[in-house]
Length: 313
Image (cartoon, rainbow, N blue to C red; front, side, top):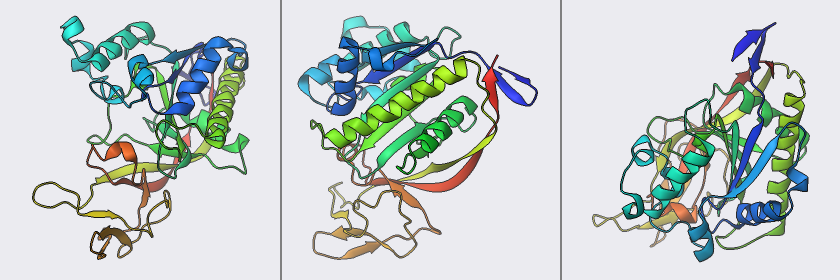
């Protein structure tokens, strides 16, 4: 990376992977990747090699989130260097294989871009997930997508919280991008969610093609929702859930939650109010997959990031 005439000069993004099935019951990505594996015409772009890839085939076959452990938390340095072969959990074996094919993680040989396609049961709409506020390439891509789909909405979730960030399958790439589209139940394919994901992915590839062909992208600003805190359900002394997401909060992803607003409703009808110090924007509200992770939702705070101008080196 270098700077020239005020623009950050970056290498071409020639090698691009599209991951589906990191969670085997999130059907939009699974279906799109299978479709593009058979016929990749709509993901072909000049100067770009796009590789669709099913990341967790055993989970896809069983239509379950994972077999032994969550693949999207498995790309730690410890797991990627673990010995044990077939005795390792299935997803740790897959993480090592994916790292061999698309990495090694953190190396110059790693893939330039990995898109990881996910569905959520939460009412999040279209969400791009950013792992670094300093990734000007991804910020410029997200700005391009957001403008291109107007008046439709595509929000950006930034997760670089040191305690809440996790080792994703896409983190193998130089520029990792998560695409989360919902609401969609697990194991179900909804046409509107499928098409929304398809459109955003194609726009992302358009951006990469333009960048590789030499287009310079001027400085821009991108509104993001920065992950702030993970909120669990209220529980009793034995760890059992004793309250649900309040009706006023349910399906209200990205909407402001103010101090004193209803947050949970106990099984006997009492309201538990939000006691934070200021307004937050919750998302992943009542996500089905996060009950096992003791998470009712995450809070975020809105902020604006500035992306430098970028051009091909």
